[in-house]
Amino acid sequence: MNYIDQLSKMNDEFDNLMVQFESEYSIEKIVDVVKKIPVELREKSINQYQIIIRKNKWYYPSLCDVADLHQFMERWSEVHKEYFSFARQVFEEFSKNNCSLDCLTTKEILDEAIRSETMRGWVGKRSPSGLDALLRQREEIFTSSNINLSMDEVDNILDYWGLYHDSEHLSAEHELIQLMTSEDYQEKRNEVLRNFCQYNLDNLLEKEESIKECRNVVSEDNFAEEQPIQGAEILEEIRALNYLNLSLEVKYSFKGFAGLMHMLVFYACKLKTGTENVYEMLNKLN
Image: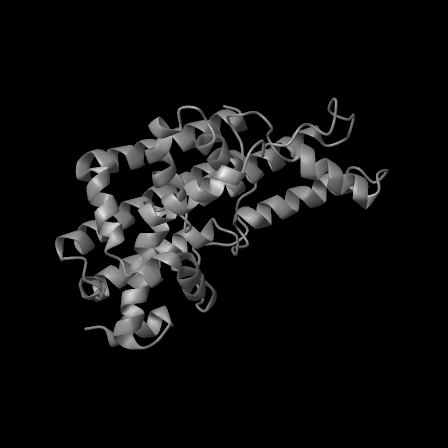
């Protein structure tokens, strides 16, 4: 299987997980539960999560052990399936307890949240075995194989040919605008709510208001044809990693609904224990 097919398969699998989740709870129920999260927390959920991520040390299983990109993509997929599975558990616990943060402040739930976030971080941007490290490594290989080009020329090639330009493999930003400016947007509204708004209806309404000023965002090709360059194979790996980074990571990792549920656990335990250190939280909980 080539990279683009593997990425498409991953995207479909995660989308199916979300649709299955909606079929079990109903999208109206999910939206209602998310709406009961305090508004100041909903609006700053990603920032709150990033504070926890950056202020703690995460003990990854292994470091710098992945060379094959297909293997890394499989690992990323399996990790995030487990990440979403735990998010569902948090949602169920939160919703059946009148959306009280107190129900999330148990040793067992926090321990699982730490484990889940550790694994997500292992394939994420801050890990030596993660997405950014693999992308940076391949960009360095590409640069060294094109020593006849200036750094500006290399950067221009990476900026353009390091991305997919077909309509099926856009960045999350371009995919969002393409969906919201389509003629059949009303039929796709739930897809935007699911993948780009964490099921936050207020966020969707804000996007709908701002999108009125956005048209023709997918840029025209700057190159008439692909330039004859060295390193075409590594460039294909860069494209795959960029798509994983700019699309799947945005929709299905810590910035998405699954991340919102993880953040609820860390935030609830922070309020309960008075610390942002997740291991101190664990020690203070009964």
